[in-house]
Image (tube, rainbow, N blue to C red; front, side):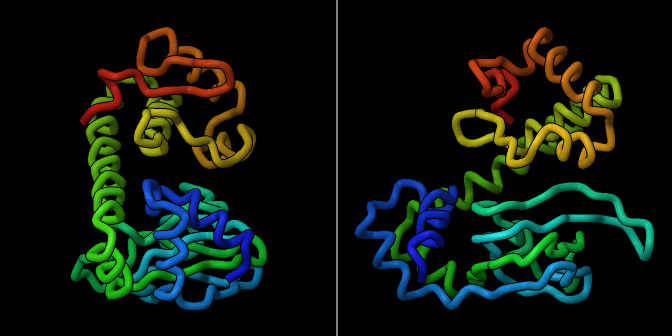
Length: 218
């Protein structure tokens, strides 16, 4: 595997806490990455795999809806993953559609491979559980967010869904792209972030936003 791809993988939440030596040992379990052309469907409701996908290069759009009525819900970029929440489910459909925004390279880790490396290094299992717990926290905030105005609610839910284990919100795209994903004006995005800081939902340190402690825990 190319060094640049290894660097992207090492930055993934899934492998946090592993030493360089331990990470190198894992590489023998990884299959060759796959390349998708611009516009190619990676996952759809009926065509997907029981695997975690890690973006190594390029970008993909996540949409939901039926037929021609599709709503952009997220953009995934190098280091981001998808498929984690359905990895051990028995459902025979995928919730969203994922399409390559440009030529995109993805490493797929199957359920079998992930189970194997989790047994070898339990910290990977802990990272996976922590990721799923963040998803639970997101839905808790989604319920609480109904008390907020529409744009504030969307921004609050995004922040709750996209923060790391320290509570720092991960903005993996520009503010222009984020505003499009949230279907709000860019000015509304900035106003909502400012308002969420004022109300104590977020705090700002330099160029970063953090979930406040009482907002961060589910």
